[in-house]
Image (cartoon, rainbow, N blue to C red):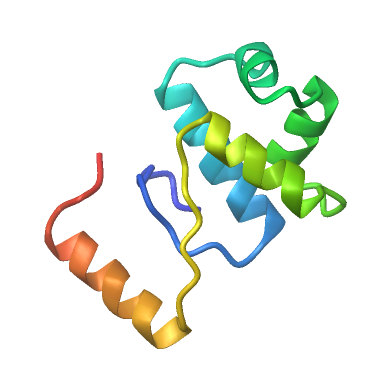
Length: 94
């Protein structure tokens, strides 16, 4: 990800997802412990997910995203690119 932090992003790697989650969590001023308590996920799992470790399970990852108020939208790439352009044009970033 670029140094500019977005509220949204197209994610293609575990590292990109982890960075997006970490940026969002920090924007909310939540600690890993608070997310752990809310999601009932271990600190180790959350830390590894934010660092982009590839062995994160999908179910646990979705619970972690929910705990910090993020959603996953799955779209065909052509639609995702159009949505990203629309959001960027509307200035929907911090």
